Amino acid sequence: MNSKYKWWILGGVSILILATLTTIYFVRKKKSGKKSSNGEEKNNDKKSTDYTKNIIIGDSQTLFIAKNTTKAIILNKVGSEEALWKGGQNLNWLKGAVEKYKKSPEINAIIINIGTNGGFNVKDDVVGLVNSIKSTFPNADLYAVQGSWGWGGNKNKTLEMVTNYYNKFKDVGVKLIEPPIGSVKDPHGNLPVYAQIGKSIDNEL
Image 1 (tube, one colour):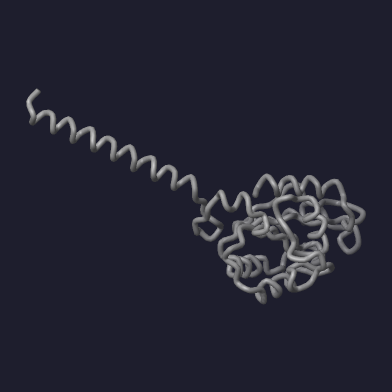
Image 2: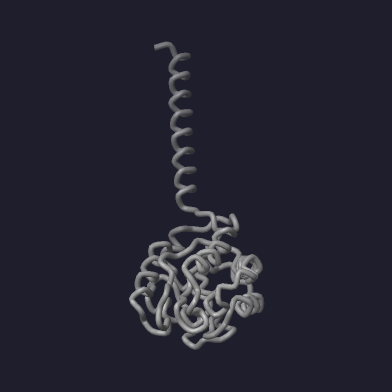
C-alpha cells in the first residue's frame, strides 16, 4: 500500500478515537453533575449518600416528618430558632430564623414545612422566605410539605385554600411533596400520612 494512504488511514483512525474519547468524557461529566435550584452544579453521588445535608425546617409537624424519612434530618430534636423548626410558628418566624442562620453552601436539600399555624394566609411572604432560604442555602434543592387543616383555627379551611397557598411555593420553583398532611383531628402524633410523606421525600432525595 502507498505510504501516503497509510498515513491518511492512520490519521483518520486517530481522529475517530479522539472524538469517541471526548464524547465519553462529556457524557460522564453530564451524568455526574446536577443543577441545583439556583443553577449551580452538584455531585449526585455525594448528594445521594450524605443525608445529613438534607434538612427539614418549619413548625411542630417537622418532628413527625423527620421520624418518617431516612434521607433527611432536623438540626435538633428540640425545636428552636437555631434548629430552624419550632411548634406554633408561622412563615414570618421561619423567614427570620433562616436569615439569622449561617450561610451553608454544603446543604443539598431543604424540606419546608410551614403554613399551618398561619392559617395558609395568602398574604404570607412566600417569595421572601424562598429567597432567604436560597441565600442561606445556595446549593440546596427546595421542597415543601403541605400542612394540615380540619382542627383548631384551621377547622374551616378547605383543600382548595391549602392548594392555592402552596401553589405560591410551586410558582417560585419549590417542588411540592405529596400527599399533604391533610384534614386531621390533630397533626401532633405519628399519623399514617407522615409515613407516606416520608416515603415521598425519600424518593425525591
